[in-house]
Amino acid sequence: MRTKIACWCGLLVLFSGAGWGVPWIPSGSISGHVHARDSGRPLAAVQVLLPEAGVEVRTDSDGAFRIALLPPGPYDIKVICKGYMSVQLRVIVRQGRPTAVDCKMLRARDVLEARRT
Image (tube, one colour):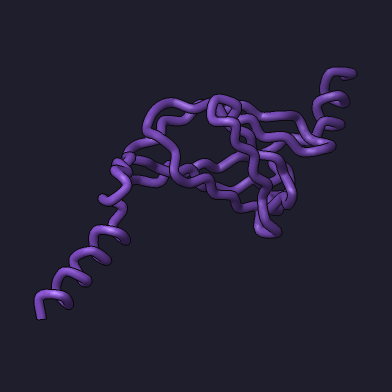
Protein backbone atom coordinates (compact mmCIF):
# COMPACT_ATOMS: atom_id res chain seq x y z
CA MET A 1 0.00 0.00 0.00
CA ARG A 2 2.84 2.40 0.88
CA THR A 3 4.44 1.70 -2.50
CA LYS A 4 1.24 2.69 -4.34
CA ILE A 5 0.89 5.92 -2.35
CA ALA A 6 4.55 6.83 -2.93
CA CYS A 7 4.13 6.10 -6.65
CA TRP A 8 1.04 8.31 -6.91
CA CYS A 9 2.74 11.14 -4.99
CA GLY A 10 5.75 10.91 -7.30
CA LEU A 11 3.55 11.12 -10.39
CA LEU A 12 1.68 14.08 -8.94
CA VAL A 13 4.93 15.98 -8.34
CA LEU A 14 6.26 15.02 -11.78
CA PHE A 15 3.20 16.18 -13.73
CA SER A 16 2.61 19.32 -11.67
CA GLY A 17 5.92 20.79 -12.78
CA ALA A 18 7.04 21.19 -9.17
CA GLY A 19 9.71 18.58 -9.75
CA TRP A 20 11.48 20.89 -12.22
CA GLY A 21 11.05 24.08 -10.26
CA VAL A 22 8.98 25.65 -13.05
CA PRO A 23 7.47 28.87 -11.70
CA TRP A 24 3.97 29.98 -12.60
CA ILE A 25 4.21 33.04 -14.82
CA PRO A 26 1.24 35.42 -14.86
CA SER A 27 0.02 36.14 -18.36
CA GLY A 28 -2.72 37.72 -20.41
CA SER A 29 -3.71 37.72 -24.05
CA ILE A 30 -4.66 39.97 -26.96
CA SER A 31 -7.43 38.99 -29.32
CA GLY A 32 -9.39 40.87 -31.90
CA HIS A 33 -10.63 41.37 -35.42
CA VAL A 34 -9.39 43.29 -38.45
CA HIS A 35 -11.93 44.74 -40.91
CA ALA A 36 -11.90 47.00 -43.97
CA ARG A 37 -13.01 50.45 -42.84
CA ASP A 38 -15.11 51.19 -45.92
CA SER A 39 -17.00 47.89 -46.30
CA GLY A 40 -16.72 46.37 -42.84
CA ARG A 41 -15.71 43.03 -44.33
CA PRO A 42 -13.18 40.94 -42.39
CA LEU A 43 -9.62 40.89 -43.70
CA ALA A 44 -7.84 37.53 -43.82
CA ALA A 45 -4.08 36.85 -43.70
CA VAL A 46 -3.32 40.26 -42.18
CA GLN A 47 -0.01 40.47 -40.27
CA VAL A 48 -0.41 41.38 -36.61
CA LEU A 49 2.97 42.13 -35.03
CA LEU A 50 4.13 42.68 -31.45
CA PRO A 51 7.73 43.82 -31.98
CA GLU A 52 8.58 43.94 -28.24
CA ALA A 53 7.59 40.30 -27.81
CA GLY A 54 8.94 39.12 -31.17
CA VAL A 55 5.51 37.75 -32.08
CA GLU A 56 3.78 37.68 -35.47
CA VAL A 57 0.41 36.12 -36.19
CA ARG A 58 -2.01 36.32 -39.11
CA THR A 59 -5.74 36.78 -39.09
CA ASP A 60 -7.99 33.90 -40.06
CA SER A 61 -10.74 34.00 -42.70
CA ASP A 62 -13.02 35.87 -40.26
CA GLY A 63 -10.35 38.54 -39.65
CA ALA A 64 -9.77 37.19 -36.13
CA PHE A 65 -6.46 36.78 -34.31
CA ARG A 66 -5.27 35.79 -30.84
CA ILE A 67 -1.94 36.10 -29.07
CA ALA A 68 -1.74 34.27 -25.74
CA LEU A 69 0.72 33.90 -22.87
CA LEU A 70 1.90 37.51 -22.83
CA PRO A 71 3.39 38.99 -19.67
CA PRO A 72 1.24 41.86 -18.35
CA GLY A 73 2.21 45.34 -19.53
CA PRO A 74 2.00 47.76 -22.47
CA TYR A 75 2.46 46.56 -26.05
CA ASP A 76 2.60 48.27 -29.44
CA ILE A 77 0.68 46.37 -32.09
CA LYS A 78 1.40 46.87 -35.78
CA VAL A 79 -1.18 45.68 -38.29
CA ILE A 80 -0.08 45.30 -41.92
CA CYS A 81 -2.13 44.33 -44.97
CA LYS A 82 -1.24 44.77 -48.64
CA GLY A 83 -3.31 47.55 -50.22
CA TYR A 84 -4.16 49.13 -46.84
CA MET A 85 -2.52 51.74 -44.62
CA SER A 86 -0.61 50.18 -41.72
CA VAL A 87 -2.13 50.70 -38.29
CA GLN A 88 -0.29 51.04 -34.98
CA LEU A 89 -2.08 50.59 -31.68
CA ARG A 90 -0.98 50.68 -28.04
CA VAL A 91 -2.67 48.27 -25.65
CA ILE A 92 -2.26 47.21 -22.03
CA VAL A 93 -2.27 43.47 -21.32
CA ARG A 94 -3.64 42.62 -17.88
CA GLN A 95 -2.99 39.42 -15.98
CA GLY A 96 -5.55 36.70 -16.54
CA ARG A 97 -7.75 38.81 -18.80
CA PRO A 98 -8.02 39.07 -22.57
CA THR A 99 -7.38 42.46 -24.15
CA ALA A 100 -9.80 43.11 -27.03
CA VAL A 101 -8.70 44.92 -30.19
CA ASP A 102 -10.93 46.01 -33.08
CA CYS A 103 -8.92 47.33 -36.02
CA LYS A 104 -10.47 49.03 -39.05
CA MET A 105 -8.06 49.48 -41.96
CA LEU A 106 -8.23 52.23 -44.55
CA ARG A 107 -7.42 51.44 -48.19
CA ALA A 108 -4.18 53.06 -49.32
CA ARG A 109 -5.75 54.26 -52.60
CA ASP A 110 -8.46 56.13 -50.63
CA VAL A 111 -5.75 58.06 -48.79
CA LEU A 112 -3.92 58.84 -52.04
CA GLU A 113 -7.14 60.05 -53.70
CA ALA A 114 -7.94 62.28 -50.73
CA ARG A 115 -4.47 63.85 -50.90
CA ARG A 116 -4.89 64.68 -54.61
CA THR A 117 -8.08 66.66 -54.08
